[in-house]
Length: 385
Image (cartoon, rainbow, N blue to C red; front, side, top):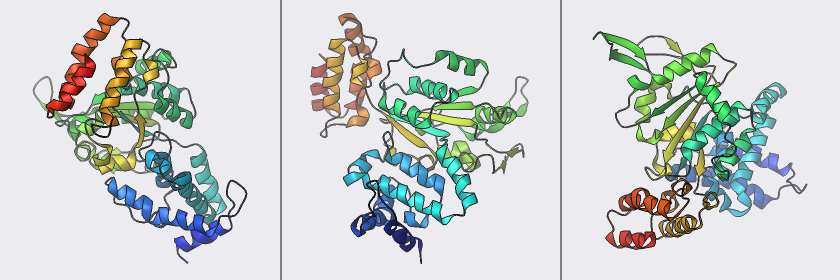
């Protein structure tokens, strides 16, 4: 009996949240979603995925379920289907796999599942939604041992004012202890910059030098009881395969602590521990989430951040933001990935501030957005007046 039939039999003996056994039509729906619908959706996002009923990787399935929840890139698709059946199907398949394992393995895996640790996180959204501010919040909350679900909800809800909840003392302490590094990716950024490579020294000699990632990995190895963080700004602007090279596999949560590779230049053994968090940002205007490097999609948890009108205190600024985003976000225009973030409007205290921001912050961005369509550019600039 294959996994599909075993799963079917398992569901027939399983009660739902209303304490009733699953009926055949619901069972068939779960199987269709895992066998056809969800793989088809993943393929449309650039991920080559066969039937999920052939997969028994708990971490991969957990990540898929996370992507179906609020803030994940599959959330809107999940809620578009009656009763959010995709996430229900994943949950029940996940439980089915537990039952296939012996008790020792179940206990071991349940410990990981009850204490999930997403160490690779990407914050994405339109310009001005607070991605830079929120990576500091994530780090502070992780350091203060906040529940992971609460962390993710706090970030995706994006409800807090910048003056609230950011434990600046915690983040400052981490910086002072040199447990956080910051880097920006761009097209010419390379493996040699990030991991290791030969570079000229001050006296003109060519020497092998560590990159920023290798340095922080080495520090994390020396202090295994502390968390370390590397923040990668504009991660989608770099060539991921070129920058990470053979190490792209090692950043996966289930490969950390266990697997190691030999670096090509230094010939040193290299592994990544689970006390290192990779937190990255990307603008949704730069590249659609659906077209980004598959290597990123598979290995990162994506948290979508949206503009929050409630964070803008000035009435005129809030009204302008609302009107501009209604125009930009409409189906006939660019869509929500291009809407203006609240950060553009939060420092407006009077009409003079607003006029300055309109002229020097917002207008250039709108001209870039609509540079190839004079009609729409004129329409949106009319709103700006």
